[in-house]
Image 1 (spheres, rainbow, N blue to C red):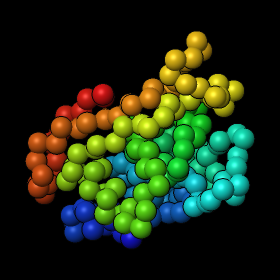
Image 2: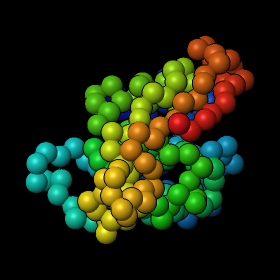
Image 3: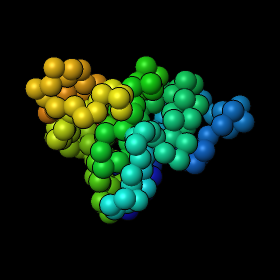
Image 4: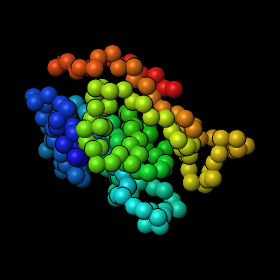
Length: 176
């Protein structure tokens, strides 16, 4: 199940979900007034050396998509990967970031369940998320330990309602 399918299932039938694979200037000129955007970027599945990338940058034009969309509208970025990637250059334009590591075949409903508040975020980083690749290798006790997100970082939303109301979901957030 795709993330797009999961989102369409999770939102109210009155909500219009607009999908554009590569939104550009022309798309925004002709677009309606959006409340926010959910931008999904990341890596294609890989194994072994097929995933080797010494720069660990966002592939497939993900950086440009983030810049084009998040500079125009409030956005949640969902990053699909199996490891930390360089994201620090984009954080100022991103309103929220979800790292979905190896989400599997049921990614759509699973991701939609947490971003729309049906279930709370539970994940904690299993490793340090570096700022730049020149910091690697980086381990917790290193003298130069200056991560973007430290080992064990994660978010708990403290969801109050397990059943979303038609008007939205009330929640508070804390970083842990």
